[in-house]
Amino acid sequence: MLVNCAVYQNGIKLRDLPVEDISDYVIRPDCFVWVALQDASHEELAKMQEEFSLHPLAVEDAHHGHQRPKVEEYGDSLFVVMHLLELVEGELKTGEVDVFAGRNYVLSVRNHCSHGFLDVRERCERESHLLQHGSGFVLYALMDAVVDRYFPLLDDLDEELEAIEEIIFAKGKVRSNTERLYELKRKITILKHAVTPLMEASSKLSGGRVPPVCVNHEAYFRDVYDHLVRINASLDGIRDTAGTAIQVNLSMATIEENEVNKRLAAWAGIFAVATAFAGIWGMNFKSMPELDWAYGYPAALAVIAVTCGVLYHRFRRAGWL
Image 1 (cartoon, rainbow, N blue to C red):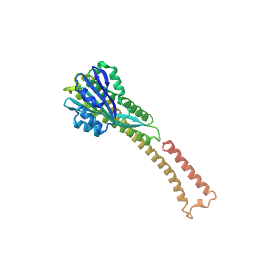
Image 2 (image 1 turned 60 degrees about the vertical axis):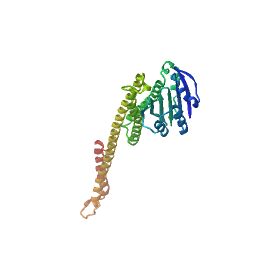
Image 3 (image 1 turned 180 degrees about the vertical axis):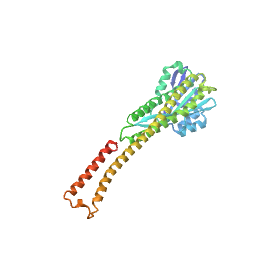
Image 4 (image 1 turned 135 degrees about the vertical axis):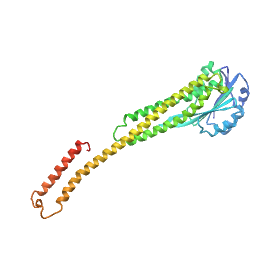
């Protein structure tokens, strides 16, 4: 689905374009065309390939989707894949944006994500003195917007970990804490898969030999790279802390299990003594004088009760009950 298609000259928007007129403006050295698609069909991508003369391998990747974040160079153009992440009802949903950037065009194809880039276009159009740098600045603005959306997710993960840590020593919470911690590690892994490859790929845009599209924009892409490095380091810290929390939680499970075993052993010891007394007095030998005593039965119960009471008191003081 076509979201926007506009042509710009010296940072100023000339007009919205029909798709059929794109090729007429792409050949003009003083203009660049910015097109945005959402969940593009095969026919729409084929049309864009024809208008922009896109590399077929890049178009094939955009059509199939589910690509690893990357930056690939095809001649004087770039193909950039980034993951779009959204937190929906506690679940981290993964989308994708594929960006084709050439000397005088930018084509973004957004898939499986409801949050678009209209704010990026508005920002660029307000800053015409930057937009006049052309497609390189637009590519930076799109990458910067994607990376900025990772920061709130990072904060959410950090807050979730802190909430779990506050109740990690609470009794009866071992199972729920374990489930929450493993769900947190799953979210960290999803975000890590989006950040780490993009960090490695974006480093090629700010140092050494940079692609023609990014020439004179190295400082902007270095800023994106720095943000990704910060996010990646924070994710490593959260993941390590979550791993430690999981170990502590499993230790708490072992401690709780030991507590249950101690209580069971204490009660078993108490009842074992009572059973021993009952077994002795239940043998019915003739030479057991207490069997003929009128108060033998109450006395036997009293002995059992007192002995069990003493054992209960001792186990209680020892912390077993």
